[in-house]
Amino acid sequence: MKTKSLSQDKISIVTLGCAKNLVDSEALFTQLKGNKMDVSHQEDDSSNIVIINTCGFIDAAKQESIDTILRYADAKTDGQIKKLYVTGCLSERYRDELRTEIPQVDAFFGTREMFRLLKTLKADYKKELVGERLSSTPSHYAYLKISEGCDRPCSFCAIPLMRGKHISKPMEEVISEATSLVKHGTKEILIIAQDSTYYGLDIYKRRNLAELLQRLSDVEGLEWIRLHYAFPTGFPMDALKVMAERENICNYLDIPLQHGSDAILKAMRRGTTREKTTQLISDIRNAVPDIAIRTTMIAGHPGETEKDWQEMVDFVQESRFERLGVFTYSHEENTHSYSLKDNVPEKTKQKRANQLMEVQQQISLEKNEEKVGKVLKVLIDKEENDYFVGRTEYDSPEVDNEVLISSPDKELSVGDFVNCTITEATEFDLYATPIK
Image 1 (cartoon, one colour):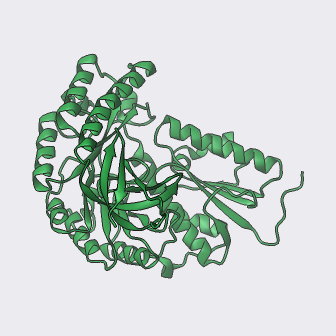
Image 2 (tube, rainbow, N blue to C red):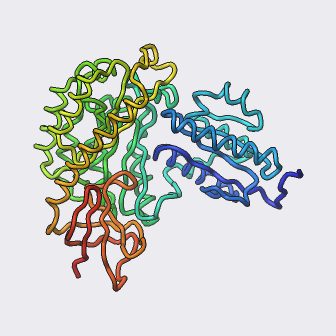
Image 3 (cartoon, rainbow, N blue to C red):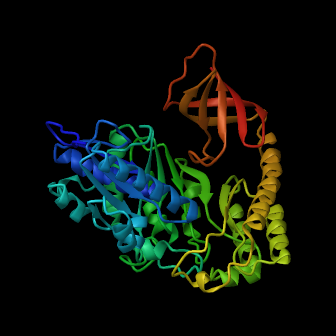
């Protein structure tokens, strides 16, 4: 079959995985647009060039990436597209194997090879676009990556293999990017990194997250700043002082803790203990009493016994996190944990994950019920069926609770902040009416 022919090449960027990948794709999109190329940040049947930004974090994400590459490889074989390029974490980690197994791909690129990808597409890297980014999220919120890579030695994690060592983005660039996003309508910035609390150690020789938060808070027009992916060991408490002082910094912290058993924390090389973690949580809540803490846990790490698991359940019950997610352990090549026997059956991993989410479901219901009758500020993300759907400062998009606002007169708009009275609570949703 003859390959699709267009008067001008049209490029489609397909992004898989986490928000950090999304930011990378947005930066690529901005550069291509700056070269006056026809590009869309979505799957587009009219495109004849496809770039897949892959994820290689855990088994399910890797499989989704492989399936997507194979689907477009078939499309190229059938003449539906002219060129197929693959970038991102999976490409960084398994480039040689993928090149052999999927020869239809024209080229593979790593996580830090945008220059080479642009050159392949006959596009120039435009330095004047540094700090500029065309966001693909709803215009009222955007992710802001403050660093790349990770220096932590966690035994289960392959991110350093794919993203390399930690590199902080200079503060001036972060502020410039945030300012640009606000000028384009962004009201909420979601700070992301592999490890946001390590920010500044490499270039400023100190943890500099607190100063970064202060300077971001000073950006005119920025109404919410949300902090993600903090590491518990060596946590910079001065950042919480800034959070408590500044109204436009959300009382919200995403801090992946991974486990509640000392034995498994040691096996994971997390550099902490349950006792230290419990004290840290107490210190965080004392510093910002109204804070919502989001965490993630891993079920089924090698060597996890029933005793270890019960310690995890007890830890979650005692800690009463506002938000919690659970991953089942994924046995990743070239990590330290890969040298251990993956001895927890998949069914057991899933059973434990489900059990922990049931515990969290009850905690979440109780905490949500405490909000009934209160007035909360809500940012509206979308209109869906008979409701406007939004979030409070205690919720990040896609992963946390939502507020369903009943407004029959339809006077609200997506991207608006609105004060609402909470009228009803379920495990993971709040219902509300706007205050007029």
